[in-house]
Length: 217
Image 1 (spheres, rainbow, N blue to C red):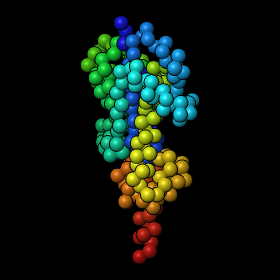
Image 2 (image 1 turned 45 degrees about the vertical axis):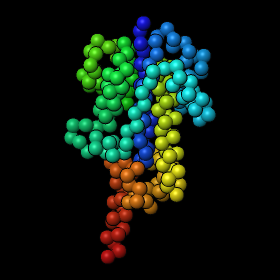
Image 3 (image 1 turned 30 degrees about the vertical axis):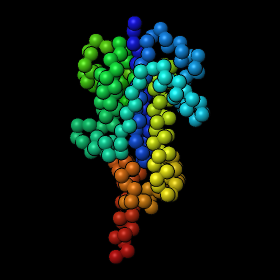
Image 4 (image 1 turned 180 degrees about the horizontal axis):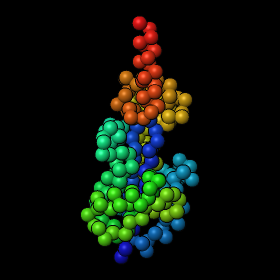
């Protein structure tokens, strides 16, 4: 029986908190269950729907969820031989190798699908696997939509955990969020460990602060 696996991520763009990647695997004949449950791209679902589906998906599917810290992201971006796309490919390979599907469908983060597919396939133990990397895979394939739900719900929970221990609002974590901008500006030293220091937003804020401090002398 053919085992199909889908992979997606949540939290690629934020300056605060982790990137979360998830893989979901199911036998091909059982994929119809996703239709019955109403599984779709997590962006098309309300938070309550995502939470309910998270429980149901984890009950009926083999799955893996990886939480990738800001430090790990920064390390990849500082490296001469790594970047965020390759980091995602490395984590995807880790999940594929662990779950051993016959077919893997990956929501591709790179504009160059061919190069990304070649890099990812090179990391796989099973070279005969059918690998499909495409844009909008979470919209086009229910199994990738299921992975997007696991990733999104987990990412939201991680942000909630951070907010529970930080006594000031951190916002959504996205650079465009004024609350997040204000938080990073004021607390980049105290809570720098939850921030992606390789992000241009972080660099601009810190550089602006340093220039302002130098100007006071």
